[in-house]
Length: 396
Image 1 (tube, rainbow, N blue to C red):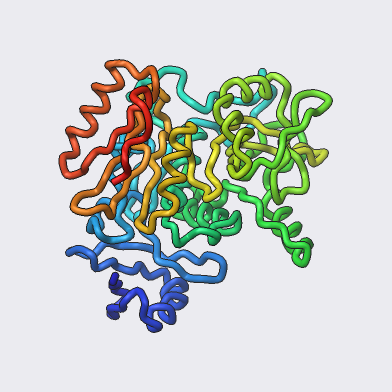
Image 2: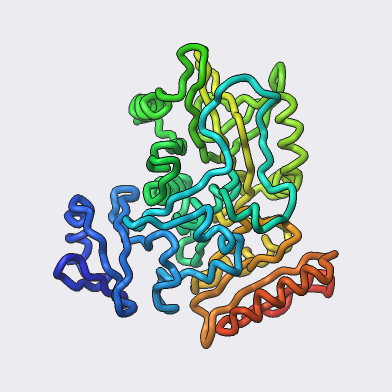
């Protein structure tokens, strides 16, 4: 059982006293200390759906004991490794300072939106400097603990919880001198009984990015679930769930989006249970039209766990009924020809398990990179599925 120190009190995670102490500690901005190790590990309190939850600080997962629920797998096994200390830096307050590879200001006309969601060349030196849109989405997802899963969570993770997790994660991040939560819009779940309140909050949030005349104007980030794509007179409309207006995408950008995210779109369309997540920068014209500037897509399972291939989806489906925690590895800025851990099983005994899927057609460079990755972490047991060799190996 986990224990936390809040102020001068030490409390068990299941004790009524802890639940009573969290609202006051939240108001006082006190940091709970996780006592899984010595010295204790600082955490923070998040308010989600009317509840107060203790969350790990960004990039603090490795400081926890391996048996602690707050433990995170090694960053070097995913695309997060090259970004630590470069595009992602932890400041004195414990917040993650992000260097973004996209603009949040529109200065004038250009050839069209739809900047690359993945680096054109798999160069780790360039990947480490700034976060692409996709990498920003992956970092929000990971920090919000949305890449983690236990079977007991089935039926308890809907868009409302996803939204709260993303906003809570963004509140622990800064970019360009401000809180990322002030730059991020995530649509609220629509409730007819609160439609006026939802509309008022949305208008207040988006007021600052509506154009009032010529000259530079601010943009915002949006993370949302795609409901459908629909043709427009010029270009395409993205219909977003819980949003009463579409996102407009210019024709050229629409074609680039379809080409660059062909795999994600194909996976989404072939699986009715999956969700398609969009992250984009957008602005609102003086006429009230929301237009996309840059965009990336990510496909997730019914439990909101990201996946890249049908093979990976099969693995995640098998793990979805397991009680022990699984953690999905994310690619961030890395290209698809570089190996990353597909799933970590951090609670597996006697050692954590790192699960890798080697795609058909992977060459010697891929295998050498994978061997270097696993050799560097001798405390973790690798599980490898080479798709070209046949069916999935037996799960640990």
